[in-house]
Length: 347
Image (cartoon, rainbow, N blue to C red; front, side, top):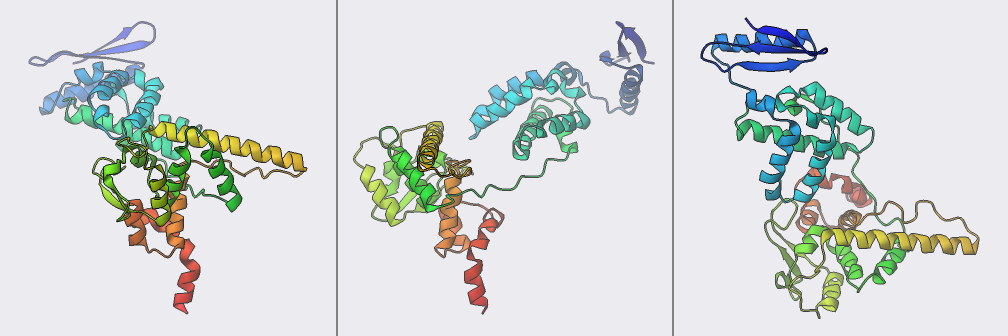
């Protein structure tokens, strides 16, 4: 029979000893929890299904995170983003618990607390990272664990962003600001983003040897896209003209800048354009639009580009071949752009 003893003024230690098995010891906050754990261990031994949880009980989530960060994260395309998520998990109260002690209720509590300060998509990403850690521990680190994330409902995805240039003036002011940024690479990159719908990471990897200006194509290889599947991107005449204008430099890459640098250039240019707009309104005695050049991200140009493809009359499959969207659901929100043309076809 298990031994339950008071350890200190507030904790209870459960000890299970059976011949032929290593002694199992665990400490709990209440005697009831200690007794429940002991009965479960003894029942598993009696049924011949007991597997030692000692390593899982001795390994904190914080330790598992660091091991996962070294062994798994570097192999992922989104390693940088995963590092951020792991850092958030590392700072949480969950990280102080052992892997064996984390239950679905603990994960749900974490989820609810995070939803008070960040978007649902952010929390879904963090829960996905947490689930991956438990799966790694369960399948490859030989720890007999259940994955508590599986027992928790994921937050529903938020409404997809639909921000694009609200007016021609907003587009002009944004592009003018980019034209004057740095040594001149930001403006052509923005034009090409609008013309092709390519992601910033795809521009980061694109090389001149994969661009054929005569055939008007750019080749993205496997591993250079978000879904790791290569594609051939058709280039509009405006995109070709933009690429020809910057073809004079001899670097292997079309844009020799990091993705983070692209985002920083966009953000700084947007703020400068916004400040200039507000100053001009104040000088003219007019009230500036509070939404003008606000909450406009570089990635929104992918939405802008996709919207323009539908406005030009491309169907879903044609648009997907340009943008690299993998499912119809991803493009479904753009179908309203063709409602008037569809109505004419219906008669």
